[in-house]
Image 1 (cartoon, rainbow, N blue to C red):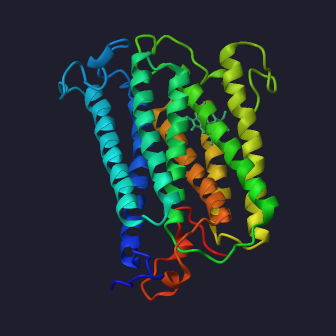
Image 2 (tube, helix red, strand yellow; image 1 turned 180 degrees about the vertical axis):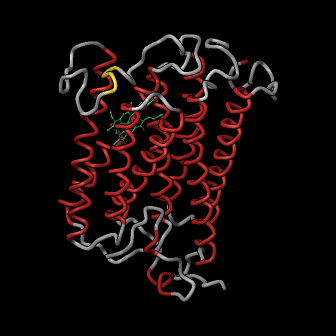
Image 3 (cartoon, rainbow, N blue to C red; image 1 turned 60 degrees about the horizontal axis):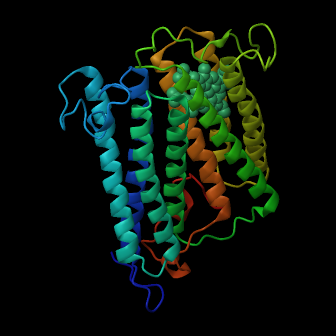
Length: 347
Ligand code: HEM
């Protein structure tokens, strides 16, 4: 049923909004899978599966100089990542197109969608540079950070396209804690990307080089029998930076979750956040305690990305940027405001 026009002159009906938000969810899920597939590319040593570093255009956007690569596991994995990336680009262009066509009166929505498209093209260039520069750890980390930004923007778009909800009454203090938690978590994730990049999986050096993964031996929270021994070498410092950021991020996230619980905001999400945080820290520790395992690295990446979506989603829900007029929310077929991609539910 089409629940037409909340305001005179408002050309958007509730069904169109629902369809648009569904498209945004599909795009966010595809982007999330793309991050994980990016991890698979790295851990199965397929980062240079389409050609060595400095292979120019024959390594990216082509694969071994061809549009369709020869069938070998590495190039197939690397190529699947590119195909999924192309699907994400098409989905994002569809999101942008919808904001231009259907939501002319919501410039904020259009701006965010345009930002997402720009970001994904930047992401594609970064991906190309990552291959061209032999999986340099800086590019690997920047590629991961940009992917997290894209996921956050998609959640903002989902939220803005949703109904204006009652003010959750978060207050400046809670919003500040949520912002700090997001910033520290993003920094932890990017620092994790730097560690991953130093492993040089898939490069000619990958099997001989000692990256930052085991720079502390197989110890956590200690590091080579000391606690946070900064200044003993680049790889140790890289490993320790990830740990220090993780300590502060965990503190900020736990504080945020407790504040949300005390104010009865966001339903069960704070509990989910605490559980996912605990699992993520444990997975990080097991990554160090155990012998190197592709599955453990991938599990750590997946849970870390999920934690990011939860925490960033909470911040977005607290900022409450829903823009749909109230009458659409009140309609019998109105979309559910409480289940934003963030998992945010109104107070
Ligand atoms: C809030 C908690 C944490 C978050 C959000 C987080 C996030 C990440 C991310 C996103 C990566 C990059 C994964 C990839 O691209 O494959 C990473 C890598 C890594 N993290 Fe964490 N991490 C956390 C806690 C920990 C802890 C407690 C440790 C224990 C020392 C740890 C050790 C590692 C190691 C060794 C890697 C490199 C894995 C590889 O070789 O690819 N992490 N982390």
